Image 1 (cartoon, rainbow, N blue to C red):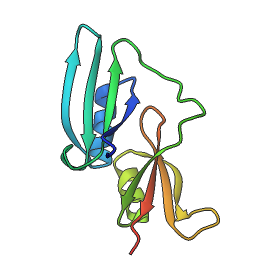
Image 2 (tube, rainbow, N blue to C red; image 1 turned 60 degrees about the vertical axis):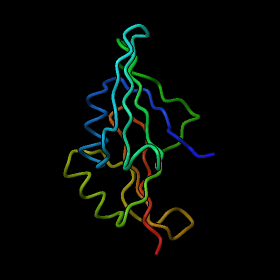
Image 3 (cartoon, rainbow, N blue to C red; image 1 turned 45 degrees about the vertical axis):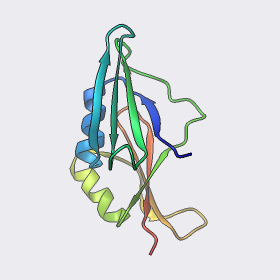
Image 4 (tube, rainbow, N blue to C red; image 1 turned 180 degrees about the horizontal axis):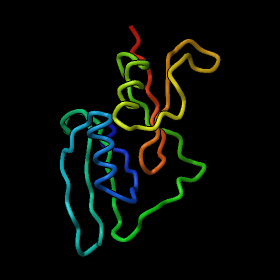
Length: 128
């Protein structure tokens, strides 16, 4: 078994695709409209779906906002340098929620950013 994807609902699919591709550097793998169901799916990630887990962005036509709720935590991404990643994300217009620094009660360098719908993404420094 392996994880195939994580699904997030989005209120503006193009805005979300832009964030994940232009700010976080992912690739749009595929996008498809489902007119009978009135929704569109877009799959984004860092590598081919046959070898990597990806994110499924779901846009339900006519729904422009969701409440994230108290059960959602975050998606984690490994980066070479958390400080540099935060600087790059900020320069591209991304929203930093927690600046880069050691995690609470630990030494691992982390940061948090938010996507356009408010979903948190944790950046974790690559361990040597």
